[in-house]
Image 1 (cartoon, rainbow, N blue to C red):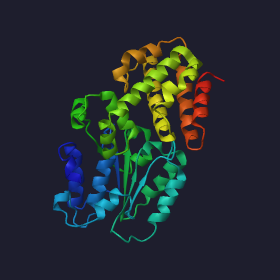
Image 2 (image 1 turned 45 degrees about the vertical axis):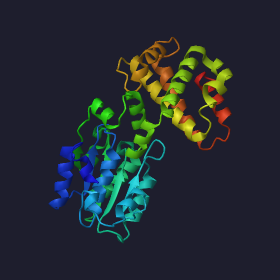
Image 3 (image 1 turned 30 degrees about the vertical axis):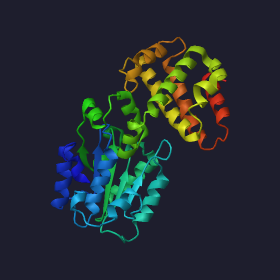
Image 4 (image 1 turned 30 degrees about the horizontal axis):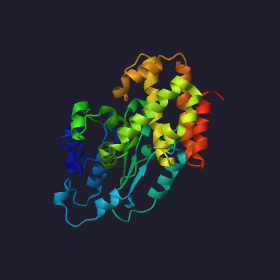
Length: 327
């Protein structure tokens, strides 16, 4: 509930609580989250606060209401969450939302929609949501989440009340999640989309082993090229055996290559700080240029799409390496 963030995000908490208590709700909020890991949890807590008939901020004050549980389960009809479909949020997703919200409310006196990663609205979707914001209905409230509001259209930003999150210091975040492994935390924050999943990811020691496995695999490939295909069973398939684990591994490989790109561009390593020496060495390899690393990232993004439909995991990995080699 909203009270959970009273100390973690005091300014955000006070603004949101006062808006509801004083009945000064905006028709649209833009949460500038600045990489804060619990952004969706705060958005959901605020939605619960708005939808609660008694506007309770703490579960201890609640009776036997099942509304919050149904919101957590994604079964509350007056709350919709829109996530990117692949790389983008598409116009069709917004059209479906508008059609659903044109119907009369049956469970609450408000309808709320949350757009996560709003910076990923494609052009058509951005124009579609802009029309929705320009002609707001009294009982509909929008909550847009983005790490960087400058990636959104100015016309969208100007129609929202901006709520800027305070950045947690890294030590504070690591203490909060009871870990000293900054790389594990940063990767988990990218892979997981909610507080519970992130907590579980950090606490699972196997994820540290997986990250180690992936960095060694990438390092071996960067040293020996397609020779890595000869050792695929030992270096890859003994850990990554299904589509879900491979999709996650591809995401971590993208993170690795993005940090290699950071080194090439004279920027600080963002995620793989625990493997700084390895990242720097790979970046300074003769075979890595800004263009080649960019190409590898794009190849990985394309292969991520293929995972859902590709039944032959072994063949997919072969194709990945051969694509890296330019074949």
